[in-house]
Amino acid sequence: MTAAGGRRPGFFVRHASHIVAFVLGTVAVIGYAPFYMYPLPLVTLTGLIYLWSQATGPRTAAGIGFSYGLGLFLCGVSWIYVSLHDFGMMPMPVAVAVTLLFCAFLALFPAAVGYACARANCPPALRWGMLAPALWMLAEWIRGWIFTGFPWLALGYSQVPDGPLSGYAPLLGIHGVTLAAAATAGLLVVFARVGWRDEGGGQRAEGEADKKTSRSSSLIPHPSSLAPAAVLLVLWAGGWGLKWIEWTEPVGAPVSVSLLQGNVEQDMKWRRERVEPTLEAYFTLARASTSPLIVLPETALPLFLDQVPRDYLDALAAQARKNGGDILIGVPERLSGGEYYNSLISFGTAPTQTYRKSHLVPFGEFIPLRPLLAGIVGALAIPLQDFSRGTEDQRPLALAGQRVAINICYEDAFGEEIIRQLPEATLLINVSNVAWFGRSLAPRQHLQISQARAMETGRYMLRATNTGVTGAIAPDGMVVAAAPEFSMVAITHPVQGYTGATPYVRWGNYPALVLAFALLVIADRVSRRRAARSAS
Image (cartoon, rainbow, N blue to C red):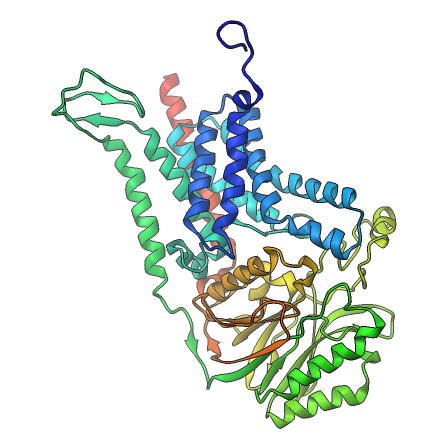
């Protein structure tokens, strides 16, 4: 296609929609932690759906969706490069290429949504108000489990904890929040496309100018636009109202908890000369605590458990008993058969108990397709690359009068796995070492994920990390105590155990999935009926 005068439009003109979509994707990142500007992702997704509504075909819509996803993930999870290059010692060009390929893979999911919407044979109101939100949620759900899953930057997280739509978290989980947020964007596009009626008796399509209309006439919404407006009102009022419901109730007396942050540099963590200083740092922090429950981060001790001096462990256990409670220690655990685990082990007044990480990080904690990729992964400076998996049916640990559900590192990104230990557990504890990602967005994004888990379960989520963010999150998702990042510090805070089960704890992701599929079925049946009427 050429412009007037036979000249072909320039690159920016020909790809304007893709460029705009890419910019929208990058801007959406500001809606997540640490910025928490929750309306922005709704605005940017509205813009993306509007661009889809103007696309000339499925391939164009897919390209627009891919551009949005590429902007979102390149900006939002660029910290993958930090772990590969800065700490994994991968050559810069290779680390850049791997990061780009990874983000491009993630961008395929919004591309698929755009393609499917453009291919759908249904009226625009159904396509953007029902089909697009359902497909967006299902695409994120698939992204959360395919190839072990990477649910980072799911749309629902952007609404946590302040957005009114986050009220759906204890009812439908984070995917339900995503569905409500995507429906908001789609309905806004439907509302904008419906058209307007003027009081003089005429009707105008969106953006149409009628110079003949008298000055006394004014535009009012077309009656058919009231339906999406009403649904939007109910959707947001429902989310806001749900935030006031207390799904769980306190049980027992509050317990004081000390969360230790050792601030050990990742590139120094596993060096022999840093072992003694690391052990001393955590012992100093633990010895200063008077709390019945003391928590150390993931792999806080850079030794296998059988290598840790026995008198060191005995001293920590004695401190816990002195406080009338227990201490949880993150340490790799090696068994007699040669397998080793990323474990959290308790010592103190209760019998020694162990939690072993079940959901491992591919390439970081285990090697997928070992015969093909072992050599490549072996070139990275990542210690302990082949952990064994803990069982999925591990139960809460009985510690300091509480039943504690443990999760390690990015296990808390999977809500359906956290609820396996509920409603039995009264507290949630996450231990992490996100020093792998340096001074990037990752630590704060991970904190926001933990905030979502607290809201879904109606329980405190306690986080002990190596470099941050260490803190306590209340059942409403609010951070009630936090340590400064990249500092050696212990924070102590009283937390309340909770009992009971939110709807999400009882039913997991099933209600959200049923809703999404129901929207697809309704859109399909209405489209078929309209097509049958037209044919007759």
